[in-house]
Image 1 (cartoon, rainbow, N blue to C red):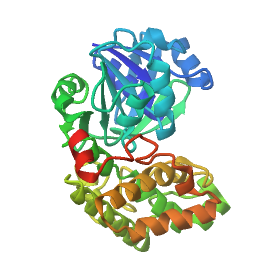
Image 2 (image 1 turned 135 degrees about the horizontal axis):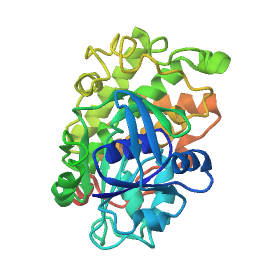
Image 3 (image 1 turned 180 degrees about the horizontal axis):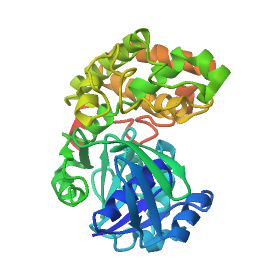
Image 4 (image 1 turned 90 degrees about the horizontal axis):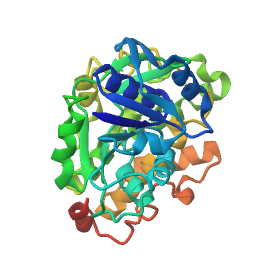
Length: 359
């Protein structure tokens, strides 16, 4: 297959490496504002990996010419934080053709809708099929120029849905040529609610705010930051997330159970599963609260969860409290920002039942 990858960060490099290592022709794009990794990959001709994936994978192209990356691609993976989804979609808009497939990986909360909006297409139609995964299939970090270290590679428990869901089987047939273990989700409502980053990262960040302020990356985020008391807050947030999913008609697997399936965790336990996790043990804390663990996972993730909960008639006092207190300590009004809400996605006028039908 011809595969385009949008994004040169941790996830983009990992997706590009795995696709290329499985024999596909891979081209990688990022905006000129992010030149370093793109230039390194172009100079070396590919990406080197160590850890759960290892070796060197040759790429056909790495650069800032999105037309070259997108035109004629069998799949385009848009890989980046939630705030990158719309710019990627807007950049692709002139070049994507009828029947092409885009996978937002991860969706980070209805990212497929955000991408389709950026393409100027109605959520229920359009020439381009847009899908999303519920998570990135790796625990990965850049380790140097054109190099990544993969701490964990997911081999089960990766969910995908297309917008709308009648296209899911077609997308799966393509994506399984790279990720054979990917499973169909009921809809993008399920992939959205199954995203556990908003459950885990804001809770650990909030209850370790003093340490993050004082020492930043000087402690291990999960191994030292996820104590049993922190686990109780994670569980309370997860309980509300599961209830929102049920009210929307989708099943949400509790995070520790899915974490064991994916290989991140050894015990399906909120109290000790994160702190004893082999998959998380090397992860250092963010250097400050101005980090995606807070800005993305609260501002885009928890805010959208709470918005969906209101539409579904579900109370979320714990999620609401985490949003409020994180807003105080970061001096950020996450609700006022409306970075990712039903309204910002153009879905504000739909009822719960209508959302279930169109998504």
